Amino acid sequence: QVRLVESGGGLVRAGDSLRLSCAASGRTFTTAAMGWFRQAPGKEREFVAAITWRGKSTFYAESVKGRFTIAEDSNRNAGYLQMNNLSPEDTAVYFCAATTLNYPHGNYYQTPGKYEYWGQGTQVTVSS
Image 1 (cartoon, rainbow, N blue to C red):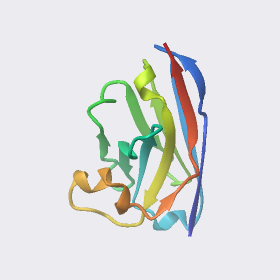
Image 2: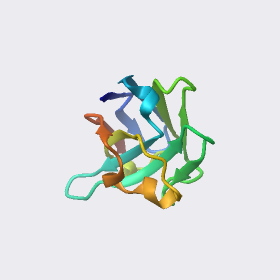
Image 3: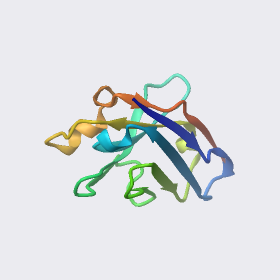
């Protein structure tokens, strides 16, 4: 089992930055990748970013490219999402997720169902 706990959310103004953290514990050595997803009220959970431990490949949703950066600790115990130039459209609950599987293509990491472990989420609210 892997336990994930997000932190770092809050209320900010448009143009501000936030850094989300995801603390991982348990059998973290079994994980192959970490992803960040978000869910706004009344909307489906959507992919934000992902990073693979092997090769350090990164993937981003088009809506956050150039503004968000995903990173992780080499010991697989933590992941981060640096969010710059935030806009009200980024308002959502942000979740980190982990998978133990290595997928052959980056598209797999954009699918919530491909992740076995999830955190409880952290709220990010961006005011205009």
